[in-house]
Figure 1: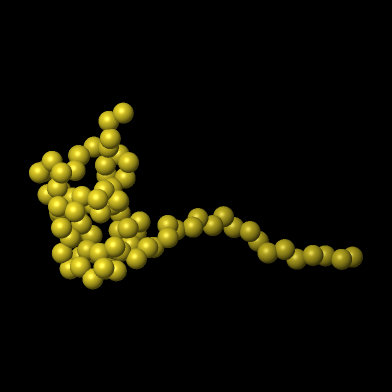
Figure 2: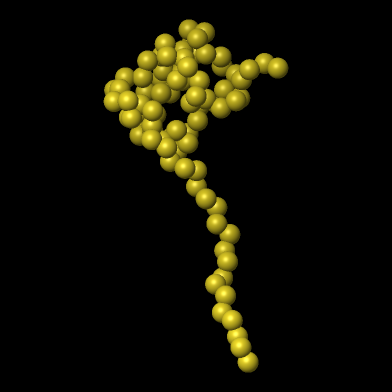
Length: 85
């Protein structure tokens, strides 16, 4: 009797890929609120700020990014919500 042994297959949920933060790779220490093109990449389509694991930023970088996005929203450089369709 030939028996084959199989590995048990479990469901694996892959975590999102950790990317190098754009702030850390360029060597910037300050995130400028006037740089709207970079800040738009850190927002979802609905206008939410992406989490740290998706951006790949450190904790202090994420705090600077959040403050810059909120400041740009207040000055009407970025929208509070996603694009109106």
